[in-house]
Length: 251
Image 1 (cartoon, one colour):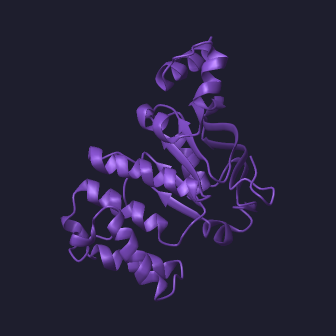
Image 2: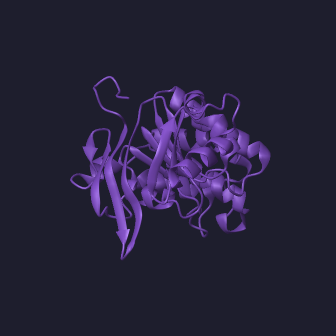
C-alpha cells in the first residue's frame, strides 16, 4: 500500500533476527501505508518487541531490510530515523528535568528551531492536560504520566511514522481513549502507525489492518472483515481470530 510517490512509509523485507540458536523473528515482510494504523499482534515472546527494536535501529537484523519512507535504515540511519517517532513499552524520561525541559531538550536533539519548538511543546502538553504539571520534576510523575510524556516526546519533531510498543500499559481509561484517538488522528493526517500489542480490544478499536505473529512468523494479516471471511467466522473477535489462525498454523 504505497503513498503518492510509490513508497509505503514502513516496509519490512524478509526481516529476521537470531539470538544464538533462537530465531526470534523469521522472514517477516509487511508494509504500512500513509493513513494506516497497522497492529502487530501476538503474545509475549512472539517477536513483537524484537521487531520494534530492529525498526528503531536498536538491534541489527540478522537478515532482511527495514525501509522507512523508502530509505534503507542500515544504509542511511540518521536520515531514516528523522521520519520516525518511537513510543517504547517502558517510558524513557529524564527524572531530574521538568516535563517542559525534557520536551525542549528532545526538540533540540531533532533540531526543532524556535519559536516552533515552544509552540509544539505547548500544543503537545495540552493534549493530555499535562500543562499543569509541566514545570514539576519528572521524578514525581506517576507511571501513567511518564508514559504520556514519552508519547508527547515522540511527536515533537513531527514524524511521518510512529512505532508504538504497548501504548496503553499504565494508562487510566480516559488517557487510553485519548491515546487511541491520538493514533487514529495521526493516521488521518497522513501519518503511518505500527502498534505492537497484546491488548486485543485496543487493537480492534484503532487498527485498520493487523498482522498475527506466532513464534516470530507472520501467520496472517488483513483487516478484521477480511480475517473473518477467511476464517469463516463472521462475528469473531480479534482474540478468536488470533486463536483460530495460530492454532491452524500449528496443526
